Image (cartoon, rainbow, N blue to C red):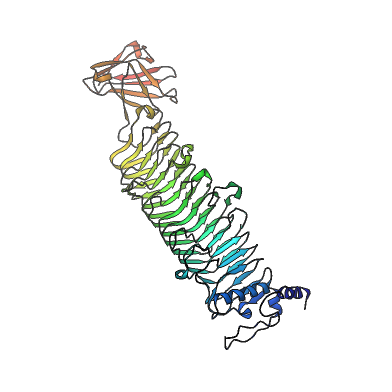
Length: 574
């Protein structure tokens, strides 16, 4: 016997039950023969049945048999269950890199009235492979987690089928680097969660991977995957860089993926979400969650008002396909929403636009929302709504919108190159809308108006051009001999103060940003009211030093800004 084999054998001598060399199946199982341990057993891979693991035994007996098998395989070894059957156990304790591997037809069933986990994992490199797990839910009464990880890096759950669990299936310890670098690959979780907060996978450590065709279906009162910490304790460290790739989520009461406190850098890519309350949800409490990316996913029939809730800052939502939501894609500061398709997403009854920016959590005023190259079709309410400023909405196509296509406010917006075909109002600029650009948009089939703004003073700081509007006129009323013109104002319909029969215009105040060469054409609002453009009384210089009266609506005068004065270019009386 080699030195390594001798060391393995010596590790077994303190175990209860059969001694190394002859492991007997317990009496009372006719037809089952005795086994002798082989050199391969002692070197790292053993068959569980050699150590008394049998489908006919009680949970207590199988638990003891599995403990013997795990001890026999030693650190880094594998216990194989090769005989099909349902094996009831109380607890399997994995440590030292040990793993349990099943075969087709092998099911591990949790013993009734469990008061301890089905599997406990400590130490690096442990795993569960090719097993079916039955949680025996109807015989469970407590809130006991099935699989717990304690300082267990690099744990793997692969090719396993999980069903009939009433509470959480897997929960890591809480701290970014305690049990990092785990993986869940090609697993199926079905009919789990009959009690509150029954998250199937609770991942509170960094750099996990969930993918390889993993599926969640018929999940109850909880979340399929819940990332992040459950307490606001910065000392535990953030939960970084989890990857959820190619996973299916279906028929779930609540959420597919939740990003709790201190979740950062998570990537959700190529997943399918169908019949859930929310597809993805981010926590905004205490500003600890950010940099969440959702890409290349498909979302069908989401019933929550925040159907995809990316209310944490610096989230990305790109190249996704979204159908039949009852609510919105909800965003916060520094969000990027690019290249998505939305069909029938939002709610008129609940006033939920397809895409909305919220102000909760103290982030939104910090701005910069990039919403570009999206297709929004048949929006039940509004298409895009952002009233806090900092919106860059460009090259979006919004078709058949039941209300406003783009609803905006605040400063520093850039609404450019969008195509809107079918809405009550194409672009609405609220009373706070200022220092912004609205240019190059196509506004078709807007039943009430193409654009609407409610604050003339704020709107003077807006550049608005090349939008194909049916009218480019701006209404101004003389106030104490003066008016103020904005960046977009080039054609002005002028009225007298208080509806007076005549009124003098001495000064035209340009807003900041108007440069030399800016031109105005001014005409009267009504034949019965005659504004008089005064020469050199204020900042207007007229040809020949002669005042000009806009005596009819056909009378016009053209002026150009020199940097200090408005210089007359031409005038017309008819």
